[in-house]
Length: 169
Image 1 (tube, rainbow, N blue to C red):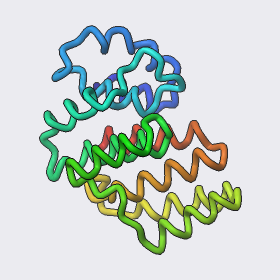
Image 2 (image 1 turned 180 degrees about the vertical axis):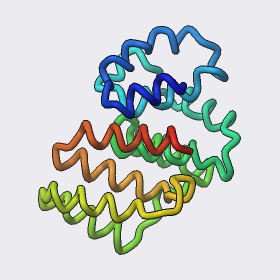
Image 3 (image 1 turned 90 degrees about the vertical axis):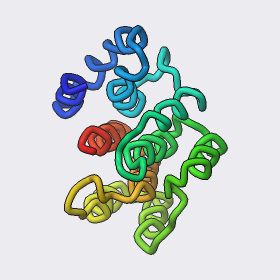
Image 4 (image 1 turned 90 degrees about the horizontal axis):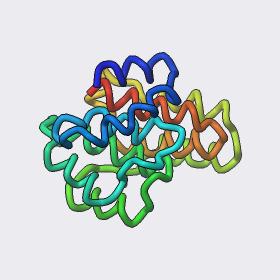
């Protein structure tokens, strides 16, 4: 997982994605951190299991406080469009992940994305991530930021931010 996080931090998403086969062959308990980072960061998720069952298994093994890592994973996957809204909603409600929460900031960010204001979205993402640590980042902020970045054509940035947030929790 540390090697994967380092590769992604350096922007080597395609190279990290080449490890998907090795991650698939590992026991899920040990593969979880690498699988989750790849699920968020890989340019192409073919060959990665993004089913409700796989994500739910990750959540059941998550030992982070308040299942924060799971909340960030689901928020990132939903924001990137890698899981559909129904799956995200079901996981969110079942595990109280807080992804649905709205604020003035999320509404402004969503509106900026709707207007195609890529620069504004990028700056607002930075301001919405102001916390002492990523352990305190609301999952709703990650969801809206990633979705807005993707909507304004900043897919690479969206994927890397989602993976980085997960790797630092």
